[in-house]
Length: 229
Ligand SMILES: [Zn+2]
Image 1 (cartoon, rainbow, N blue to C red):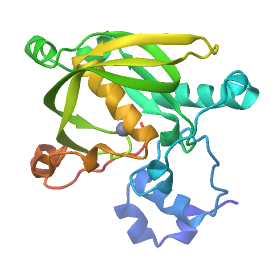
Image 2 (tube, protein in one colour):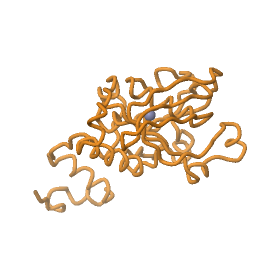
Image 3 (tube, rainbow, N blue to C red):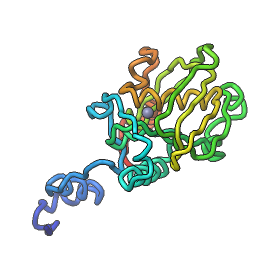
Image 4 (tube, rainbow, N blue to C red):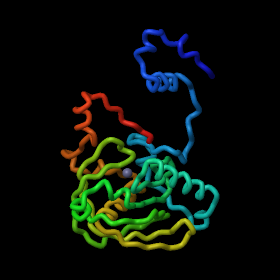
């Protein structure tokens, strides 16, 4: 379907609108077939899929075309949104798969003091199918964290200091790793997703903040929250 921009919008109004706003307005008018999961976008709080307890993947299906396609979509969304952790339910498929990575670029967002304080360590991209988490150190550590499915907000969350993760890799082989500090936090966050939980369920509610509240003030409220990069 095609529209003639100038004939459809009064000229005076058209002059006041930016191209982006005109495009967004027309996109809202055109009825499009909604995408089906696994999505290439990340779903947002309120989507019932985020509250479902995800199902195990039978080992004989780990290398099936359907699961391989899911892995591909998960990796694409993970890279597109530059995540440090993502679960399959966040792209609309409630199966027990997570992906975690913490690389040098991610660590550039933190000062050397923060890296030490948060016990940040690097981890290459790691997919875990049917992950099981065991707490190795029950010391609770409080730090601020966010979630791609609660975009635009952060809050303080208490997490265990050290965990062990066991599960299968993409080839269906058993893997096991220990995660400390920040990585332990990421794994606990992703495991919560597989059990239908969000960090907002366990956060310190008084610390719940818009991640760009200062920018909102600096720009007189003229800030838009993007849901895709
Ligand atoms: Zn999350």
